[in-house]
Length: 220
Image (cartoon, rainbow, N blue to C red; front, side):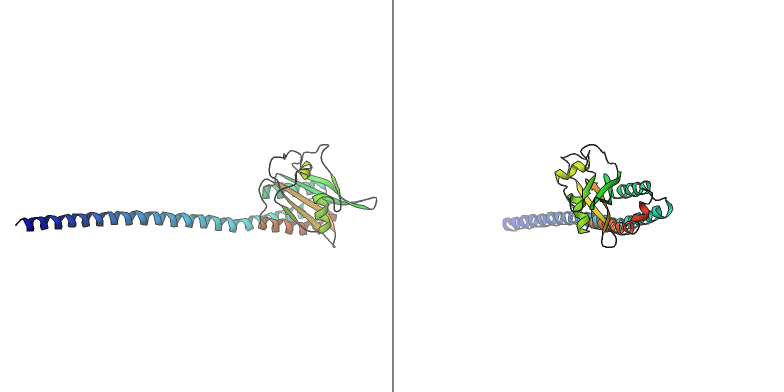
């Protein structure tokens, strides 16, 4: 009699434990599925955002190139046109300053002189002219290659008065090469890195401007 009673109690205990275990497993699986779905949705959102950025970035740069072409076609040549081009590029690529150096011959020495700028603060500390091969501007002109510099040397920052010596400054220097010669040099400074798509965009604009340097500066 007592034996059957104890057996009955033990069976009931096992049944209760099994029911509780099943209940918690169901709740755990529901929570797990909810969290998994949330993670997947988050990953999808992040991926969509990155893909959207990758798609929109080239479109933005393509639009910029078209705007530069429009400026060249619809504006009078001279310094105002160069400044308008620097302004448009700088705003589009989030550059804090821009500069345009034109090739000049001084006493049979090739130099690149600052003729236009965007947001430049000119004072006695600015170096307004570089010989071919001198400094970053002269070196880019000599090598006829674009320079994407992740951290501008402190000694170069006096060219850009107002940027400060503590901020990390990124530089993009683009020589305008025509007939195997750098006819001018564009330089942009930013507190953000210049991406490869942006670098390609500036290179395309540089090629476009290189073919029009003489007409750009006709009335300079």
